[in-house]
Structure formats: C-alpha cells, structure tokens
Image 1 (spheres, rainbow, N blue to C red):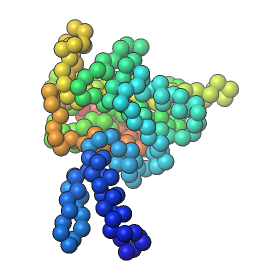
Image 2 (image 1 turned 90 degrees about the horizontal axis):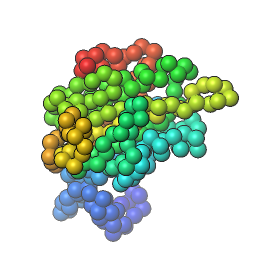
Image 3 (image 1 turned 180 degrees about the vertical axis):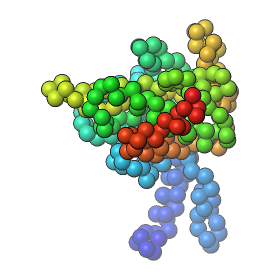
Image 4 (image 1 turned 30 degrees about the vertical axis):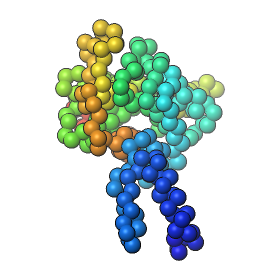
Length: 253
C-alpha cells in the first residue's frame, strides 16, 4: 500500500472484488493476503497472460450463449483486419461442424471457442493443416488438465476420449477478393466437458461423450486449458513450415 500510494482500505476493497469474481484469498493476521486459488470463471486476464505471437495482443470476448463463435470471429475479421481475436461461449444455438453438419452444443458443461488470426500461408490448399495443428494443441492442453486422461484424434478433426467423441474442430478462412489472398484463419473448437446427451438425437447419443463424465472436477480451470492451447497453437503457427505439430498429431491419431 505504501509503495502504490494506497490506503489499506483500498487494498481491502480490491481483494473483496477479486473474491466476488471467485478468487479464493485468505486473510493472514499481521501478514496480509494469500491467494489460495484463482477463479475458475472464464477470465480474459488468465487466458491472455504471457501469450506469444500471433496472440500477444489478443482481444477476448466471453459470452454465456451465442449462435456460433465462428460467426462472431468472422465479423471480427471483417471489422478488425489483421488483429487476433478469441470468442468463447458456454453454449451455442447454431453450432456446426464440417460440411455444414450440426454440432450438438447444449450440454451441462460445454466450452466453445473460436480464434481468428492472420495466416502465414497464401494458398487456400494450405488451410486444412490448421485443423491438424489445432487438434494437436488442444489434445496437449486437455491431457495436461485432466490428470493423464488419454485423448485420440479421429482424422481429421474429431477429438475422442474413452472411445467417445468429446470435441470437434472447424477451420474456416476469409479471403480478400481483390488481391485473391487469404486475410484470416478462423479455428472453431467445441468441447463436451461434462453432462449427458439424453436429450440429444439418436445419432448424437451413439457417438458423443464427455471428458469428465457427469460432473466437472472441482480443480478444473477452463482458463488454463484455453491459455495452454493458445500457447501451443502459437508455437505451431510460428513453426508452420517445419510441421512440428505432425509428430504429436500422428502419435494421437
């Protein structure tokens, strides 16, 4: 408080604000405060910390429910060309997969996100490889967060756990018609974290599953998963020409 020119009351108010956001902070007599656990509510600051190019200036938007995070990312790509953005929602009402197929997005605990950035390739034929590196990056992030749970990738864009589909990836691109070049890459990912599919159509029930079963573990922090995914994705993007993601992808295929 002395160093920042603040009163102890001002510090107390700031700590109370963090507690209301879900941060567990203990008060220690004559010592101060101790951060015991960060908030597990979606938090742009936790997600954005120390990210590397192309996400060092990432703009993050968080929603309870949207039609499709990929649609929001497309709008952003048009309105803010050249900038990177991340759109996250707990539910989607019009989620979709490859070839326009419906993606079930109504489950107790789901996580849906789309990241948009400038591509390092110019040829449309190069776009599908972004699906592979995104799958590899997300598998690494989920395995680290799920106590050694083993994930598999079904060619080309489905994530499986214990023989059931727990996630899907949809990569899209926007183009500049005048220059006939790619202007942005959009990677959308839908994850089934916990719950069941008893209300879903039969075709969904036959294949869909969740990462954690019926209930979320108390120590699961979605912010950490998204951060780790973006950190690994950024590395794969920067080393795209080396195809450094392929070994990890093939290991989980």
